[in-house]
Image (cartoon, rainbow, N blue to C red):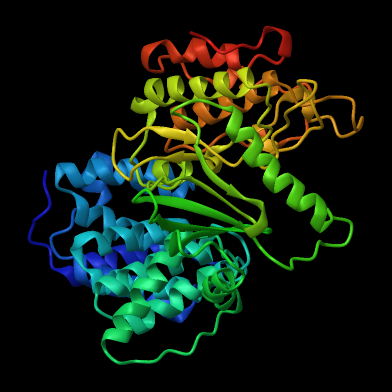
Amino acid sequence: MSEGDSNPPNRRIALVDAAVQQRAGRAPPPAAFEEALGAVLTRFAEGAALPREHSELAHLARELVQNAPIWILEQRLRELSHDGYLRGALVAIAADLRLRPRPEVALLLAQELLDALDPELGIEVARSLLTIPEVDESRLIHGGPYASINMILGDALLDAGDPFSAVRHFEAVLVSDIDNARAVRGWRSAMRALERRGVVVTQRARGLALLDGLEDLELSAGLDSDRYELGRPLGRGRHAVVYQAYDRRVGRDVAIKRLLAGGTANRGGPTSRLIEARFFSEARTLARVRSPHVVALLDAQPRHRFIALSLCRGGNLRLAIRRRLLGPADLPRVGEQLQAALRAVHTAGAVHRDIKPVNILVREARRGSSIALADFGLALQDGPRDGPRAGTLRYLAPELRDVSRPGSARATPQSDIFSAGVVLLELGLAPRPLPADFDRLDSRFDPRPFIPDGLPDGWSARIEKMLSPDPRTRRLAR
């Protein structure tokens, strides 16, 4: 049975509301959110199938009640859309949200509306999400619901021809995540649109004001500006900022990574001299590595406190996975390239120590683009092939997770291999996230049970070798 029967929309909304009332008893959602969901029901109830009329819709309704993970709901929604039951799916989601306002599910609903069905209603739903206390409490969480919703609103409003409103939503992201390149690009696009209209906007985001003022600071500090023409900022870390730039001498685009001048170390943190030593240690490491899958060092200027690197336009691996430019089918290609990068790094006598998706760049923002390992700021070289632990917990090898015995384990090429194995497992599981077990401080952690069977081209077995709990048996598989 397909959607399109003759029951009047008011009757269908009444049926939905009756089902909601049967399960009521919880605090009602905010009025703005309730109104937006009511608008969705009014807009799509006519001609929509009900869960009792279609088995897949019934599955969706049960998964909503059971608080199924968002990736399952996304998959179910795609299947229902393909079969012609999208209206029924949207009505089922909106009805359930009136009882349980899960922000991630409401965001899925808003995105579906924004894609083509009803962009104005999608904006209304997304805006109403910002009134939910749980969302508001996530203001300072990088990549949390508040940031995700504001990012979607910024993009949607910019597309809808409202750059003034878009600016404020991009700023809301950048206040807590100044490194968010997508928000920076959106903000600048909105500002240019306003400038073309003759509108002057007063900035309200302190973090964005800092980023906006860096270009003048960099140039005035003597960034060999006769050779390099600075373009847009690509990202900012605690101690450095990265720009896209044009190298006039050889006629190519590059990435300029500049150590911030005058930075003061946090109490108990590294001194400015140590920060600078680490920064240019990255250049020395890169100068020794030869691989098409490692970001290339093009220039180093200690006097001007910057290095020039090959430019990768596709963002990082995590962003590419989120954009669906990479998925499990790309595992063999990405796996071979990442292993080639590691072999080159280890052959050069270095240990990366911080292999994770955000430190793996994609050359171009398109399917099939190659990758390049980057960010060698924590790398070790010129000495024994081991060093203190560092990196991010979920990608850390088991031998480096024991905090009860500080200094008992050292970073090695084998710990790099483990980190790379976790990255490749994450790609193989996409769009599902890594299991929560990866975020535990457990020196006996064995991730191999989480490797799914049947990954492309035998990569289940290859990742198993990379994720061996025993570093002595851990190896890059050919």
